[in-house]
Length: 329
Image 1 (cartoon, rainbow, N blue to C red):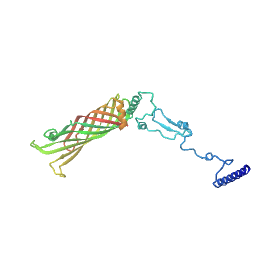
Image 2 (image 1 turned 90 degrees about the horizontal axis):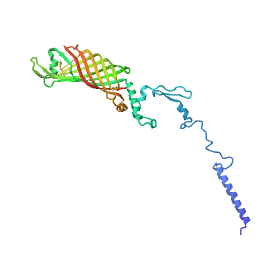
Image 3 (image 1 turned 120 degrees about the horizontal axis):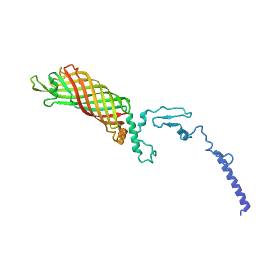
Image 4 (image 1 turned 135 degrees about the vertical axis):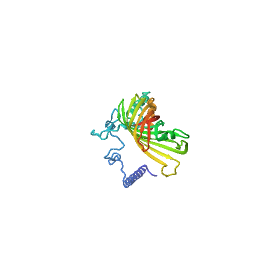
């Protein structure tokens, strides 16, 4: 029978053996046991740089960015308050038009209408150029030997005294609240046709086609009437080419085609109805989608005078038409 004293001796021997085995095993695996040698492994990790994902002083970053009240200038400063960016072009404030910072007007129910009206008013003041497309009915006078042009394109069967389509670009170089001054550059293409005449006065089967190509360069002035209407006029030198074609000659045969050129003068008078001036929401949306600052419908009168062609031909007078003007920044 094992006595208590013998049992306690065996238990003590087994405990010493196990403790010694664990100590040896741990040293083989380079483990650190409890005691004075324990270190905080996380605390031992030190870096010489701050994290790129953490802003140590966000208030300082905000203070170093200054935006002017008119939103036309954004200037960034470094730690020494030295300017490190250029001023933004005046057009830049309209690039992201239509975006409103969330929460900016959350307590104002009418902020959308107020904001759009202010933006549209500012847009009109920054217009720098425009493009005008106009159709002018051919009501001009033609003088020629034996009045042959009028008798061809104005009388007889299947005659066509068509109009001309004009395209003009206006570049503003002076603008104020009461007067704008611009350079007017453009041209057009007109078409007429009809059957020719024999010397006896009988109508032939030969078809004559007459193309007119004017080119204009002038100076224009514009008077705004509030933001609903404008009165504009331009005048200057012009040149026109006449291209004649007849179908009774073979292709390439001499006499089938004839071109002649004359210098002259032109003048345009326009009454512009600003379609975007009656509704700020429409004007705002149009600019947001197409960058058009103003869209106008024009009632136009054109005067022209060309009388220096190689043949005895004179084209002059005044005619009327309708068109549209698209204004841009």
